[in-house]
Image (cartoon, rainbow, N blue to C red):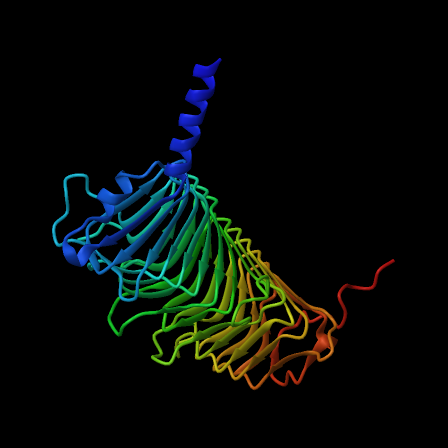
Length: 386
């Protein structure tokens, strides 16, 4: 019995010691973050502080309760050479739980020197939080394989690849504050890309992306004021360079749902019109905007709904589009519900447009629509009911 208690005391003492896993890595002095992570017991809490520039691919796999904090100026830099393992990410978090990364800058090289992204989070990781993190280079932050992530005050500057923040494979991402932008180049980029993933967002600014928000393959994006500690509420899509094609593109059975955070889109689309503009809804998709959509000065269309899709407005504002304000095509519908103030669709090239196969209901809830090219505008929500 005494041996049992002695062994238990020894195990308790060892566990208590390991539980205080605290490390500092100074890469300026030649230390390695990967080497330090390898010294940790993954299932016990650990805190690692990073100093200097670490030029290495960093793998965080199978950790539970890890805090990785960057001292001022701390950077993860992609090496110039790619090892035979051919990593997808400069910082990879996989099959981990309760991991916080804060205060780090992650720099990747332009494609094809990195296969995918600066930061990748996958393998069903959950309770992952990236806070005050910035990325530069190829893609940005890629979240995959049903992972759950919070991005708080992230800054993504994408110079190659496609999307700045991606949520795919049924992943769930909460985005609070932050900035997405790109340099002036000939690339075609998306700001937020949700393909079979779900994104909840507030307080973001997305600037000069060809597709500021791209929702595809049964993906969904919700704009909600869910974090009362956030600095911002509304999502701002701005396009001062004039390179934008769509402020938000919702396609292939996807949805964009605006609630207690507004989506403010300005200067979207291209002068030739077509299906470019502030919001495109197509291929069996839905837009639920309520009073939280504000579109101004689109170079193309304001809101275009096509191919068996539906848009719901109630107190929205669509003004100053060079082509159509609300455009409904190819067996699609738009409903405008009552709100005070009413939905304002005015000052557009054509305020309301629909083809012979489509319909706009709730016309009496639209204010100041002067130019109308639509024979199927119902004054109320329905035809006369029995």
